Image (cartoon, rainbow, N blue to C red):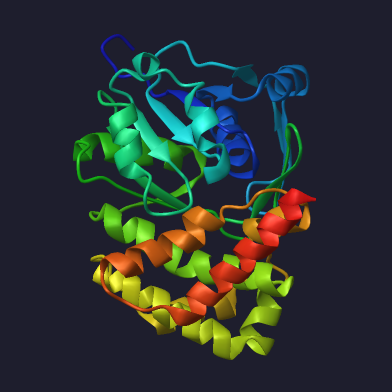
Length: 308
């Protein structure tokens, strides 16, 4: 109807891996105009074969995909869904001028990326985001969503509240679970307080969450306590009992993406997930001996692995 706002958005998904592929496919199925931004070989695979999703939550479905190696047109929202190790290269595919004042939703691991993105995209509205999900790109264009959850949290200290709410509403209409919060620091640290212990311990042990919460319980409790202290000092109070309760509820076979990367011989997000905690602890004058030991051990392993 004339004068009515377009209910469908133009959305760029930078990084159509497990997270980006799942979100983009769900949005495309709902009718949104989704542009996937990726490496040329991935662009070819998506353009030819589309996206296939296998998910207990969203069902099994396939959607055609539009993809490009470099974003050239304005979008309502740009979702950044890449590993920290690939962020710099991914940002080269997104010229600041192409975004204009669009929303930028980084679903990245870690707590240090917002200032970088706000400098990179000065006219855009950068929103803090976090997603809790276990989803994997098993091949270009093939996504397996294995967790029963896929919750997204968003918040922004700078973007207009009505625009953040509009983003959440569009995602919800597509079937995604989105919660709008009023504190971006809390959004980032609440996720890291769970993710960092999960990633560090599953990777160190070479075992899934079920093993960590039983056979590595004492170490788990120590790491959770240390990271909760850092989060609290950063302005995002975290209850260790709540984090441990989350561990006790996740599927026993759940692996972290860091563990999967290490097992595959790839570079991991150790810096963004683990070393970032140590940097924050140092800023606030806190000691995190168990976390520091794990980070040092994993760093040594990774250096040796990548040197082979």
